[in-house]
Length: 268
Ligand SMILES: Nc1ncnc2c1ncn2[C@@H]1O[C@H](COP(=O)(O)OP(=O)(O)O)[C@@H](O)[C@H]1O
Ligand SMILES: [Mg+2]
Image (cartoon, rainbow, N blue to C red; front, side, top):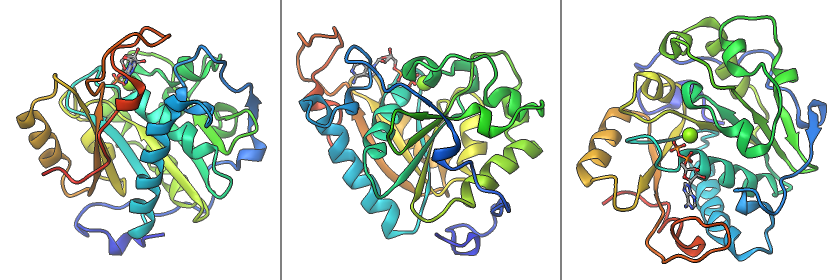
């Protein structure tokens, strides 16, 4: 894992690993894996719709591993670009690998959606944890089926999220993510860059960012400014979502599954 001092901008206040890591997958409550009708198309690797996510998984693992990065944020310029869709499917795809432990963390507190995507039913999640309430990460996280994926959800709430992202509990969360063994990847589903300060505050503590671009909606200028805003956190890649591919799929989504994204590549 990259030592904090090796990071690109040593001027950033870096949260150091805590003595306790995030809870091991085997210690978490296990919930049933998603059904066929869910939006987690990456769950069944035999399903052709999971293919784009498996390709993205290969590229992401390669890039992160090359630079010893483990904490990856997913954001976009504006809301609704498909951050949670990409984050949950990428994480699910990673969770099917036996040699990685994947953690997926919902930090889009105001528009939290991972609980609903994964069918997690509870009332207290990361928002309450970040607010300092008496709740442990071990009771918040869920292991998805018998996979190597753990999801830490938030439940929609009106909070001053930017304040929470500079609080002690946030520091603890990041410190515990950094303390995980080297075979763990942590994916953070973030708010959009231009919604509030949250994404930028969180990005400062992560090793890399993936930016979701909504085909036909996100402009080049928006993407360029979003990437600039996120600096100096390295850009791991851009994901072109809702890539123009026609219609008629059984779930009624716009776009074809073969074309979720074009590549996880450096922007040109
Ligand atoms: N490629 C896609 N194919 C089908 N549905 C999608 C796709 N991308 C996003 N969606 C759907 O669009 C809506 C908004 O996506 P979401 O991931 O919640 O956006 P964000 O997290 O960026 O706000 C969700 O209902 C999601 O399931
Ligand atoms: Mg979202």
